[in-house]
Figure 1 (tube, rainbow, N blue to C red):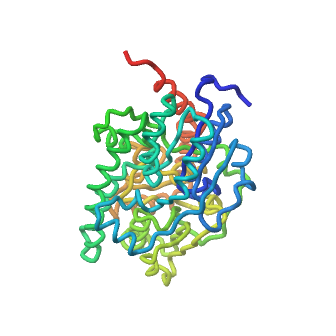
Figure 2: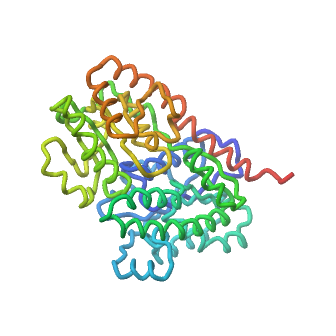
Figure 3: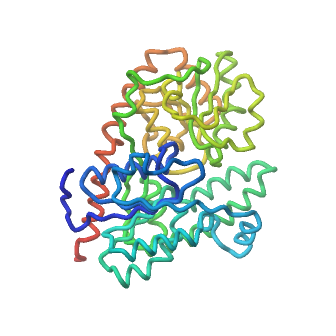
Length: 421
């Protein structure tokens, strides 16, 4: 094991909303990558995680070798009356979603054993626990650095969702919900940032939004990343799906993903099929929302639900599509497709943080006809698909491989320990 080059900052506690294994969704992929990268560089990791029913025993996962200690607590369930009460009493929905007295007790127990050099709170759903232990850590462990890893600038994400929902009459109640939550989230995120010693953003855009909260806490961009070598397409399995294959991956109870799939299915796919009647859209992801039930009877669309691995489906894609109209951050689905040399068509929002206004490794389009034309052009040009895929893989390895990203976390601690001028 490589010796840490900052010996005083080697004991780290990660607090997570879900066990980061298996790495089937964005938060788990990011957290596992950070833990693995830091552990391989010699840092000692303790993990405190909520665990959902059906997730594996951590002792049977790579976490057993990567972490000194793992503590899990069953994820709580919140009833509709409880959620309504929180809504009416002015609380932030995302703060309360995974609130568990047992989890707080476990966190306090870990803090009582011996001090950590740094405590990472991974995402807003565990940020409420940072509020709970802030004063105790400041009083008893003044050398401990509190880090908030913001998977999104959530207040802005809710604003974007509200803008989309306001355009659809039957979505107006959800739009109102998002407007209310955006205001509460802005106050809550400002408080979380103020209590942190350092904030991590996953993209430059999110970094600017979090800095705008005026917390005076330093914000460092540490983008999502992947283990690029693990996505090589050479001898990997390829799923048996219908071709020409258009593939989208993501957790399918997540509102931005649901919106993306519905927009593509209703507004883009029919235009593609006018030119290429056999084109087929495969949506890969767990927990499909009931809003997607309307797609189940269509012969041109397949909803897979949960799968053991999304990689075979990505490898099978003739074109990988990212029709996102809301959301933020650096999308891991994009990085995975790039590393697997896929030809990609994305909205500019979907490629935010990775591709600029112009890109030589993917095609960008925001309206239905332009998006459809880009897909149609690629389906008729295998050489261009190959060229885009090769360029995307090179870019992913150079900029979004964990060995490139993890040193940014280490530099964060160095900055935090530098005396003020």
